[in-house]
Every structure is written in structure tokens, then in C-alpha cells.
Amino acid sequence: MTDEIINEIRSVGKNLSRAILRGISLDTAGKTVTANIITDEAFTAADQAGADAVIRKYVPEYFKSKVVISKLTPDVEMVKKKVEEAVSSYFKAVYATLSKDDIKVEKTENGYYYVISVAPSIAPSNLCERVNDYLQSQFCGSFSGECVESEKNLQDLEVEERHDEIEFETPVRTFQIEDFKVLEGEKIRTTAVYMSDLNLVSDEVVLCGTIEDIRERTYKNKKDVEKTYFNFVLSDTTSRAYVTYFPRLKTIEKIKQLKVGDSIVCTGLNESFNGNLRYTAKTIDFGKTPKGFVPEKRASKPVPKYYKTVTPQPFTDFEQTYLFKDRTVPSCLKGHTFVVFDLETTGLNSSPVSGNMDKIIEIGAFKICDGEITESFSTFVNPERKLSEEIINLTGITEDMVADAPKTEEVMPDFYKFCYGSILVGHNIAGFDFKFVDHYCANSGYILEKKMIDTIPLSQELLFLSNYKLNTIADKFNIEFNHHRAIDDALATAKIFIELIKMKKSLPNF
Image (cartoon, rainbow, N blue to C red; front, side, top):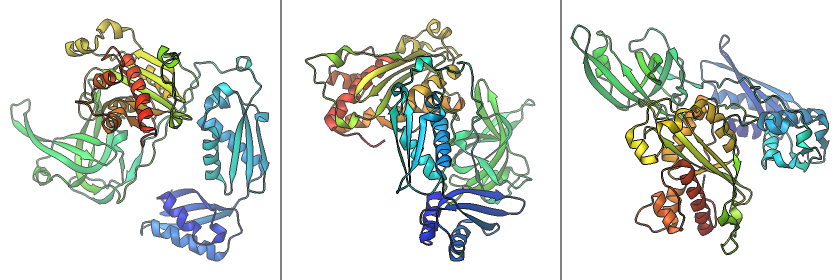
């Protein structure tokens, strides 16, 4: 919606054609929505009136609207400061090596041009792209830049202690409830928590969504009297929530009238039970998610500066250096970094809200840079629960092998760092593996980019096989591996991925 608003404002007139929307604020006491707009041209009363009309269209009738337009033309020092901010926000490791003289900015006929001196071993390929995006969100005008090789020796740089942590608390996202109507509650609820963010323990959590399933059940209380309760499955498009509700006598008949497709608001308790979160509604009312609801991107902790628990290892594969093997790298792989990973888990339940979600017991991953497998990431993970005989027999991973392994919350920051800036690849990654790492990374405050390539549909597009299991595809390419161990499965998937891209000669959508 923000893009739509600013595009309309830019169409008001040439003086606002390069305007940016710096922010929108809400004064609940004064019931006023204020939009702050920046332009690099002198503006007129007609421009102000046009911007006012645009913002008024997007503000609910019961709120007043206000537009503040400011003319701002940055100078060299302002741009330099914002370049520093961008590097500090997006590339902590790079920023730690910079001095004031490592960033230079000059004004050009077309805008501003900057140069960043970076040690080549830590310079990310998308540094200038991210800096440009940040500058364009702060100022009007055109920005371009480049990274040049620094003469500094990284070993001579003073670095912070590895145990220093950046304080960061991932905010819980909320949205405005529309068409709220009391059914049995006593308060008017105006905001609800995203169901995908329902990983907090709280005495009062408000959810709003559409009923996808409703079941009426019975139980016997301590006096052996049969009572009714309900199980709901709700969706707000970001995720699903499984809700248990014990109705009041005076409202039970109203609750029985609810059906699949109804939109409701639940206010209740989210508590930890046997290591998992469980949501129990106290009251149910009517309400809807906003029309045309588009979830906002969740904020993530900055990338950790250092690996603390699991350190990646350089990887050299004999087949990659074999003289008689076709080592041609498709051009579409160059300039990209992929992380191919696989997991072993305690079971198949990958949903945090559907009961007892399973845990990761092994992560295996390989990094592909410019078409070559260059690094490996491998660790067992202590699931803090017993392994079933079925899992032990399937994977060969025993209780003793995971007993002294790091716990999930210790591993995920390192895994996030290993994956940062890469396209994720896996065999059934979207249907299984990503759900686990996405959930457990988010629990630690790290939000993975959903840029994924799944080798199952890619194989189905390019190969004609009896099935598309990993070992079947591996046999097709004469790849031998120890199936059902994460590190071996990940390596086989990485090799398969490269071979499939050689066949396709282009990357699939991600």
C-alpha cells in the first residue's frame, strides 16, 4: 500500500515527482494520521492540496489526516552519514572494519557517488545495492557507488570480544481489527497479533481470523459431569492457530451457531505446556482482518558478527577438480550464493500451533558460490527429548550422539549467519525443512528470507523418473551417498542442484 500511496503523490505534479514518504504516524488521542513527505523541489499550495487529497483517501473516516511536506536537498556529509548507517545496519562485520576515511562521497551532475574501501575477503556482493536502497528511502535523487579493495590487513584490526551481544528484541506485529462486534466479551478489541508471531507467552493475546475448522467435543470434569468444549482452526493468512475454548453457559448456544467461514476475534491465554505453546480462548467475539490485508515484513536481529557454536569448514570435493569431468559452470549460477541444506528431526510435525512440534536433531548444509561447493556447515542438535526407535532406526542417530550436542537456540544464530544473503535450496524444502528452520530461527529473533528453490519440482520439470525421491534422482546422476543423514543428503542435493541447473541453463523462480 505504501508504494501505491507514494506513486499517487508523485503524480500530483512535477514538484513532487521524486518525493518520498518518510513515515506515517498516528496520534490516537487526537485521532489524527500524519504523513511526512520529503521532496527536493520547491512546492506550491496546489501540491500541498493534492498530497492532502491522496492521503485523505487512505485514512478511515473517523480519523483526521495531515500532510507535512519538507524540502530537503542532502549535502555530502548527510549522504556519507547515511552510507555509514546502511553499512552498520545491514553488514555488521564490514562496518566493524571501517574507519571514517574508508567512505568517500562526492556530488555529481546526476546525484551522489560514493566509494567504500572494504577488505576483499568480507565484501558482500550486494553491499552497494543495499546501500542504494537505503539512501533512496531517506533522500530524493540518484545514488550510485562501488566497493574498492582496502589495503588493511584484517588480522591487524581490533575486533570486539566474541561474547558481546547486540541487544535486540523482535517486535510482535499486529493489525487493526475491522467490523468488531461483541459476542460475549466485555472490551472492544482494536488490534490482533499476527498468528505467525504467536511464539510469546502471555495472559492476554488477541487473535483475529477466519474459521477453517470447528469441532465440538466433550470431557468430564472432576465431578464426573460431562462438559462441552470447542476446538477451532483459525487463519489470518500469515499462519494458522489452533484454539481450545471452554464456553460459558450463557453463550454456549451462540458459539454453537458459529461455522466454517465466519470471522472471529479470540482473547485468551498463550502458555507453555510440555515445552510447547498452547492457546486457550477466554472470550470470543466477531471481527475481521483488514480488507486487502498485506502482512508487513517482520524485523530480524542483525546478523551475528561471529560463529559461536558451529563454525563452517572449507570444502573441496574431488569431483569438482576431476580433470575428465565437465566442470562448465552455467552463467546463471555465477554471481549467486546458495545454501543447500537438509535436516533430521524427531518427527514430521512442522507446525508450531498444531500440537507437539518436532525438533531438529541434525543440520547439514553446503554453500555454493559461483557454481562451486565451497563450505560446509554440520552439527547435531540436542532436541531435549527422547528419540523414538523409528527415528533411531531411520537415521542411525542415537541418544548418545545428541546428548552433548548444542541446543536449538545455540545453533540457529550460527545457521542464520551461514545462510544470510543466500538463496536456500533443498529437497522438499518448502514443504518440510524450511518450516523447521524458519520457526526455530524466529524463536531466536532471526528472520530468514523466503528465497527458496526446491529440487523436487525442478527434477519433475527436467527428468522422467518413476519417482522423485532423493536417492532415485541421485542414482540418475550416479551420485553415491549415505541416505537419511543430513550432511550426506545435503551434499547429494547440492550436486543434484548443480546438475539440474546445467540442464535447465537458467534459474527457476525463487
